[in-house]
Length: 297
Ligand SMILES: [Fe+2]
Ligand SMILES: [Fe+2]
Image (cartoon, rainbow, N blue to C red):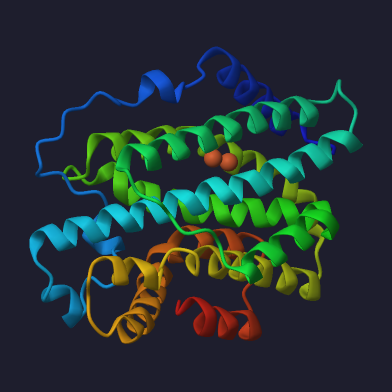
């Protein structure tokens, strides 16, 4: 991949930061923190059923417990999606020369993503939650995409998922009532993901800048599909069952719908701005975004 002189300077700087200031989850996260019992694990805005009548009927401990289980589910989804990203990065590394900037950055990114996966696994263990694996359809789509999709589509998919996780992380790291372990996990992830997001945007410029209307529409759809893919891993009926709630089929249906609206609202700014930067929005892609992401562009 060819980069402009200015982009080369940015990438070199990011490689330097990654080498000189690595953030180690083992020391960066306060794993020894003594809980007071007042901590919350997931901001209310991100809890699937907050705002619904069913949520108002829950006791405070039930609300906290729901947040604890749902944040573990979200982190499991991150770890799983980063495993896929690493599979793609390794595929890409095999194709390019070792002396290139791209090789060096992707190598740093892969190292960081493996550390993130380990951090999410440790955080889930800290929370003492057994999360639920992705559905068969999620696993199938992921394995086919990682094996066969072109590099540009995979880079865009990684970028879309990174933007979605960053939006959640921003809410968590800025909410002072959130458990310090979760807050720091979100903070570490945000710092390193900012570099990954910037690199993916620079890498994709060659494709997005020259794309005609069909390709631009396809790129917008890829972003939308990936956000949908992530969001549908967050809500699980089993969690409502474990909390001992009644009519969990109905709650699950309403939770999925409710989270779709919240997610649409939250994602809007960053994703909207990115897709707009390559003129990806048109009547058709806006219609799909409205239907799938419940986001009005
Ligand atoms: Fe990550
Ligand atoms: Fe990343």
